[in-house]
Each structure stands twice: as structure tokens, then as C-alpha cells.
Length: 127
Image 1 (cartoon, rainbow, N blue to C red):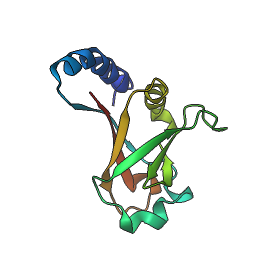
Image 2: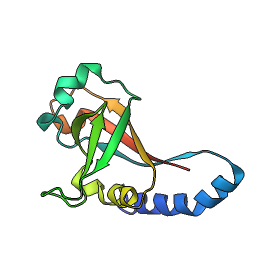
Image 3: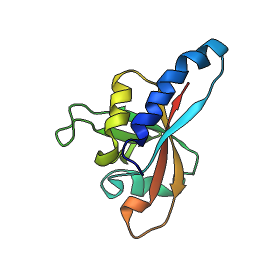
């Protein structure tokens, strides 16, 4: 995927936001789809059997994270599952920091030997 995609999508989103609010329309824009980072280190493994595709996720900024200033943790029902991957978190972190309403949901649950392929999630911005 082109690394500029999330930035371009967010620019389009912000440009169309005023028009959507004027018209009273509600729309969601998918800004990225990512694998969950850290599956084996947090609660995801223990909660695996309870999660379903479509479940809502909460994205929480961690600007003081000692490993990554753009860290965005991914929670399911208050449990830490892991993080938005470092290579994909800058735009999401920036939008959360700006106060943009960002939401996420589980888009794929897959039994895999590779922990990084077990949970995929989508990030949306609502207009």
C-alpha cells in the first residue's frame, strides 16, 4: 500500500467534513486496515475465544510511551490487546491528538502460527 494513503484519505476527509455537517449526513471513511501488534504480549491471546469480527475497539494514545511517541494502544472491552503497528501509527496518533473522532473494529480473526496475522482491525473516521 502507498505510504501516503492514510494522509491522503485524511485530507479528503477533512475537506469534505464541512459539507457533510452542513447537509446533516453521517458517513464513515476507512483510513487504514492493520494487523494488531503485540498479540502475544497482552490480553489478546486470553480473550481470543470471546472476540468476534465486527466488535468495536478503542484506540488510546500513549504519547509518553517510552518505546514510541506515536504509540496508539488497541483495547477491546477495556482490555489491552496490543498496538497499532509502529510503521502505521503516525497518522492515527496525529488525528487523535487533534481531537478527531477515530474508531476501530475487528475486521478479521484468523488462526495462524504468526501472532501478527491473528487479528486485523480497521480504523475509521466519522463525518
